[in-house]
Image 1: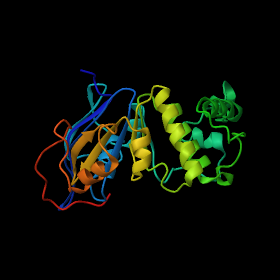
Image 2: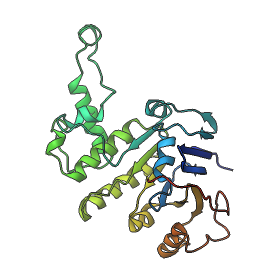
Image 3: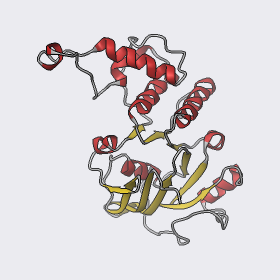
Length: 271
């Protein structure tokens, strides 16, 4: 059986009396786009934050390439090769594209200028940024020295995706990457997601946009009331059936994967 690149088992996260995760599982296989869908309060955000090191689960285990790991901070997840593109993008608008690509990983100039005077290798970072943008086919951005605040929403999203693809060695997680974009820019971001997958990086995609999910996902993880309700194949399950499973109006097909047949009764935290 193929070893998942990232696997979560029985994750539990409580905020006082509110249970955000009630024993949730997840498996991301090599070379796939795994979409995570669920209604508000289903625990999607808490699940992804646990995988990216933003929150520490109260119970459960996380594995990367079959080895158990423990993330205390997002830096720990990054060191394990997990990069996350958050809905808020986390870009610095006043900095240029190259500086954003290397944010927190700035390169120093070689020799004394870098080691003693701590000068940044701006030209080297801009050349590498250009290579990363070209590798992903991002042709709408011509100048890596351009300030991010001058870019459109789709171009800013492209910068965040390029940063994740440049440094993510195992997994790229994308949280609602097309939520605030128009039709044309959404199309460009979806193409970027496919490009990242085609470069060999598996992707976890969190989205409320069902047409986008069914267009790019290889499998769909349906989260409900803090648990994994089902994992379905978008080629064999219709969009309306996936929504019905997500809302509890329909039981998942017998060949799907789920955490439990029983529904937790604890209060749920908002996503």
